[in-house]
Amino acid sequence: MKIESKFGGATFAAIFFLLLLAFSFPALAQTPPVSWSPDKLINGAPCVFRYKPVTRLKSLTGSFLGKQVFFAFDKTNGIWYGLAGVDYDTKPGSYDLALNGVEASGKKLSFAQIVPIAKGFYRTSALSVPKKYVEPDPADVARILQERDLKNELFGKVTSSQLWMGNFLTPAATNTSSEFGSQRTYNGKRQSVHQGLDYRASTGTAIHAINSGKVILARELYFEGNCIVIDHGQGLLSLYLHLSQFKVKEGDTVNKSQLIALSGGTGRVTGPHLHLAVRWQGSYVNPATLLGIKLP
Ligand SMILES: [Zn+2]
Image 1 (tube, rainbow, N blue to C red):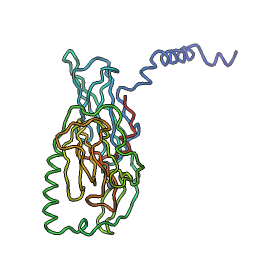
Image 2: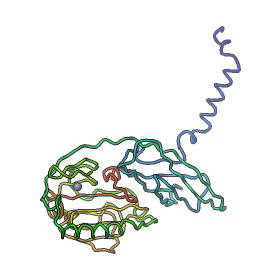
Image 3: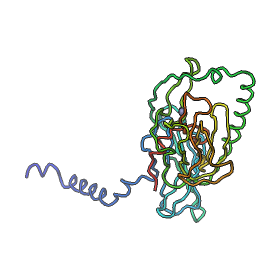
Image 4: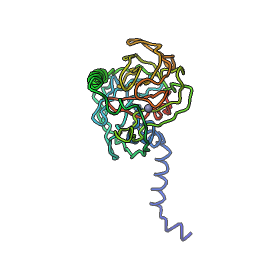
C-alpha cells in the first residue's frame, strides 16, 4: 500500500492518459504520411515514394536531390506513387523530399519529409576487353562523341506521366553475374563504375521489358552494341545492352514482360551477356533494387 501511495494519483492519471492516447491514435503511430521502398536508402538506389493525403488532392509533385519527382494517383487505395533515385555519388546524410500538392478546394499543401541516405558498399573488379574500347582510334572517337550527343538528347527528355504499372520484373530467366556499383578497371587502365546489372545469357536468350513503356531507342552504339532504351515515365528509363537481335523498334509501345530482343555479345563486352541499366533523371541506379520493390 505504501508503494502505491508513492505513485500518486496524478502520476497514475498521466500514465492512464498516455495509454489512452496510444490506443486512440494507432493510425498516427503506424502510418507516417510519406513512406518509401526500399525503406533504407543508399547511394545508387532507385526508390518509390508513397504519400496518402488526408484530404483529396488534385495534383502532387515533389523535389528530391535537386530533381523533380512526378507522382501519379492510385484510386484503388488513395495513394500517390512517385519513382525516384539516389545518385551513386550522393554523400550519406539527411535529405529533404519537398512535396507540393493542390487540394480539391484549390488550397495549396506544401511540406518536407526528411529522407535519410546511408552509404552503400560496392565491390571492385578488373576486366579485359579488346584494345579499341580502351584506346579508340580517331574515327571511333568521332562516333563516340556523336553517340554521346544522341544519348544526352534522348536522356534529357523526361516523360512526367506514369507509363509503368505495378512490380518491375526480371528481363531474363537467368542468373545475374555482375552487380551494380562495382568499381571497374578495363585492361588495368580506365576506371569506371559498373552502372548496371549483368545477366548470364548466351547469344539468343529471350529478353523481356521489365515494365510497360515506350521504346525510345533501338539501334547499334559503339560501347553498348545493339541497345534498347524503354521510357517508363516519371523520369525512369530501362536500358538493355549487347543484344544480338531487336524484336521492337523505336516508337513502339511495349507491355510488361513483352519480348523485346535476343541477347548477344555486341559492343564493349568480355563475352555474351545482358547488361540491364536503369536511369532516373540522369542518374544510373541499381536495377536489382528496383526489381525487389513490391508494388500494388
Ligand atoms: Zn554490365
